[in-house]
Image (cartoon, rainbow, N blue to C red; front, top):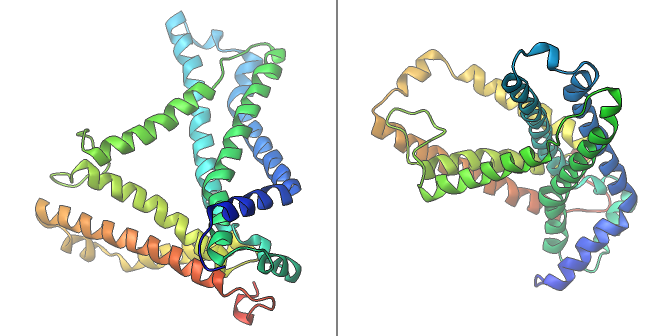
Length: 293
């Protein structure tokens, strides 16, 4: 089997999901508990004491109630991004034992099909599971918290509105239909370059954690995070005021520098994905000493 087969790939994905249903259910339960804790942090006190005594006018009260959902969404979005990285680093955690590696290597599929099955779960299925858990946790809050005295509207519509705005805003940046740019450079680069820089950061960080998961099959999140922190410290130490002064050039040169940086971002991401696949292809039942972590 050398060619990539969609039918075989679908069977591998189904086998991964159903064959590890207990682990997936535990993950879903963990996501639910995490979201429920965030609901408690934001909504428990207002549900017990109310907001009427804090605001003099009905308009101010409505504003305060409407502000609770964005507070929750900010927390949920941050946790979801961390989960996005955690899922990447844990994509190959099933290869941490000899028995699991044997089971993986004996699957009737190509390396590419097995690899992309893991990648699909890390990029799509885990975030979807987290979103489902958030909806269930918010529903629980709406059913239970009014018993403390006060109830508040669902935060789910606000979450999907924010999520839709993020992707629609990204599309507008890519198509150049917006004048707003996330980059604060003199003269400002075109919005489409802002799009590539924003997503280059997200994809680059994801690819870095995926590579870490391929290298460190045990405790991949901890080891990869330690490497990431060490790299950030080294970069922080190497950047001095003199270095920053040399970067202060004309607006045209700043935009050119931004484009070069974008190319480096995406080249780094592609290299990390390619290297993680290369390491995955070289999986052995008895791992090399360097990778026994």
